[in-house]
Image (cartoon, rainbow, N blue to C red; front, side):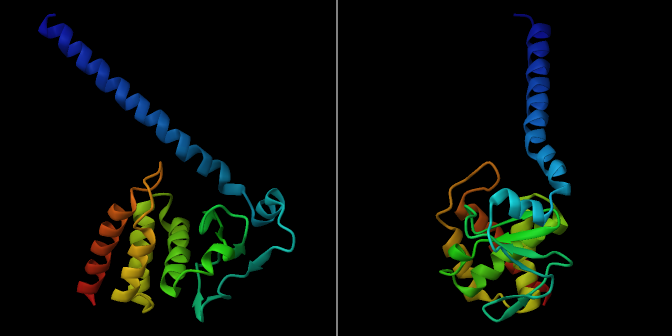
Length: 182
């Protein structure tokens, strides 16, 4: 095969890779645009939550710590398949799963979900935001960082999250960076 033919194949392969990456990214980005008008009332109805507990912005307390995420309310969903989640405009927490976690881990989960309200869908950004927020607000110290890493350590990689040890290493760097600034 000539050098020109090889070069054409390389360009085609690169182009295919770029197009595939863009299309796969759209699978994750487009649903977030569709969710922009998804309200807390619609969420409660769609989930079939009877007597859902909704906490007004600034009224949430977790283990005695008052938490706020701007003007976003929090809905407690004991049927959620994760510890927390977020839609544009509100945060979701699973009280059934959270109750067995240490205080700093609970607050980190809330802060991580809050981060999605301000920083978008990127999970690493949300992790770091939550860690920095914890240090600045005084609820996260070295022992809490260890608890968060212990909690996240065994988490497998997913289409949204890197594996637990990678997340822990990244969050430790965030923790160290904000400690230096204090």
